[in-house]
Structure formats: C-alpha cells, structure tokens
Amino acid sequence: MNSRTQQRDRGLILTPKGWQKLQAEIDRLGITSERYVVRKIHEKIQLELNGETLHRDTVRRIVRGERVQKSSLEVVFKALRLKLEEGDWDFAPKNQLQNAEDSETSWFVIGTPITHPRYFFGRKKELKRLFDLLKRRPLPNAAIIGKSHSGKTSLLEYLKNITTTPTAQLRPGQKSDWLPSPENYRWIFVDFQGPRRQSREELLRYILECLKMSVPSPCDLEGFRDAVSSNLRQPTVILFDEIGVGLQRCPELDDEFWESLRSLQRETNGNLGFVLATPESPSELARRTGHSSPFFTIFGYTANLGALTEAEAREFIASLPRPFPAEDVEWILTQSKCWPLLLQILCQERLFSLEDEEMGDDWQEEGLKQMQSFAHLFDHLLELLF
Image (tube, rainbow, N blue to C red; front, side, top):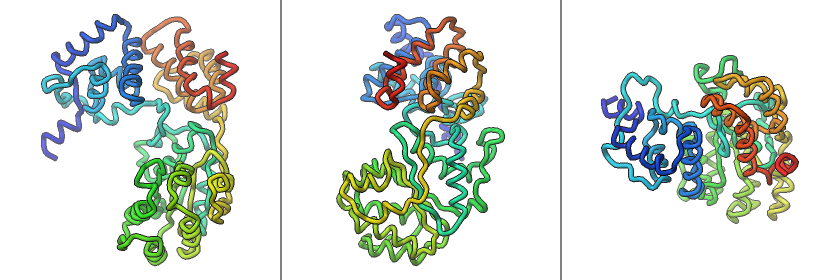
C-alpha cells in the first residue's frame, strides 16, 4: 500500500481555513448549541439536497472538527452552499487508528437498511426458522412480509452477511454459527429498485456474474438455464428485495421467466432457494400485478415482520454506548411500541441529549416530532401525536 492510499484510509479533517469557512456559516445561522447546529445542518441536507441523507453523528463529527470521509464533508458544504476547496481539508493524523469508514458507522440506521450485522438486533425467532430450513435440501423458499420500514431489507442483508462476518466485527456473544460450513453457501442479493435489475437480460447476466459463471451470448432465458443447471453445485440463495417493483415495472419478467426459475430448483438438485421481501403475500402480489406463474405459490415459510419483542428492544437499548435512566427506557419502549425504526429515532435523540448534558424533556418532543415522518406507516402513531 503506497503512502497516498494510507493517507486516504485515515480519512480527512478540516484545516483552520476550512473550519473558519464552516464556522462563519454556523455563526450566520445564529445558533450556539452544538446539538441544534447539528440538527439544523442535518435538516438543510435533507431540504437542499433533495432528500439526500447523512448520519447525524457524522455531522456532529464535522462540527467538532473530527475526521470523516471526504464525501461527508462535500455533502455538508453543499447543503450549506459552501464550496469545499483544496486547502479546506487535510488527511487525518496517523495517530487516529480507526479508518474513517469505521468511525462514521452509526449505532442508528434510520430510514435506510442495516447492512452490517453488528448493528442488527432482534428477529431471533425468524432467523432461527430461516437458518434451520436453509440447512436442509432441497433449499427452501421463504417470504418475508412486512410494512415499509419494518426491516425486510435489513433482514435479507443479515441473512447474507452474518455467517461469514469475522467474530471480531460482531457484538460480544452475537450468534453467527447458524449454518454448517457457511463458506459453501452463495448469496445473491437482487434489489429490483435498481434499473439494471428491471431488464431480463441484465438480471440474468448479474446472477451469472455473481455465480462466477460464463455469460452466454445472447444472455437469454434458455442460455441462463443451461449455464445454471449444468454448473451449480453449491447451495445458493437468491434474495429478492422489492420484488413488487420488478413485477410492476418490467414486463420482461413475465410468467415464463418466473416458471423457469421454479424449474431450476429441480434441475439443480435442490441447491437453489429463493427468499423474497414483499409488503404482501407472494400469491396476492402476483394476482395484483397480473401474474399467474406457480413460482408465487412455492413459498413454504412466511415471516411476518412486526415490532420487536420487548426483550429484543431492551437488548438494543442496553447495547448503546451510554446507559439510559430507567424511566427513559420505559418511555421509549412505550412510545415506540418496540418498532425498530421508531426505537432508533427515540434512542438517538436521548443519546445525543445525554452527550450534550442537556436537562429537561426536549429530546422527547424532538423524538416524537421526528417520528411524524413515519406516522402513515404505523397506525398507533396517530394516538401518540394527535
């Protein structure tokens, strides 16, 4: 690794010149409390950058002059309508040991999927059942059903990553030995919201590339089936996320396509399984989108995602870097109803208020305010907010 690469891995910090530029804009906003500076900048990112997001604790690091990735600096400066120029930043000192990407990882992943297993909590019942099924042949087909922001995508990511993530990168005692010989499994994550996943040829090519198989020319359904049925020898699980988007937007993903996938399970001696995430049952989804393939009737196990159990919610709160007063824990559990997204919103507000040594219940008001963005997803919020 050359010296320039080593510097990049340490992340960036603002120079005095860059800090003065940022501080001048903070002064112009007329806010002195760090917490409210961070909140204001965070709001401006969402407002000015068309919904682009950045973890609030990353914004805090920038406000404190700590190291971050350059892309994070660019987002903040752009939101504040400042120009990030050469001389505004420098590489972090060598004595900052963690790399920038690790230091910016947040305990709170709000509104986006959790991709690192360390920050995934709960769903123990569903995970045990899914992995018990995945130990057997033929591989099963399972459906994960839940409302938007209930954690479907995060669960798919966890299935894909947990069994091969080094123990040192997990929480103490976090279970990862779900499968015998996990290195033999292949996991293919397909997000139908990506434009390249809404074309039949691009989707087939992507799956073959993930399997490290030769891509036929043309990459049509027949060539794809021949390649997979002749070469698939390892247990392989294809994870379909946002499958409803693919059914609605891509007419090429027709009944012939789905029937071919179903046939491949037999042709690969049970080494191919499917897990899909959807807000409704696969059969209902197929009916609503005009599909009649038997593929949508082969899902023998369904995991319906609701709130976490109280024990799982308490485990998450107890894992945070600072303990909460007992009465705050009870308030958070009551108000969130243990929904993971709402739990993270309230815990984030409480943790920030404790770090800033703020007194009073302002954090509760702010937490409920932040929850309003998701009021249309969870019926019980109407009772809390109105």
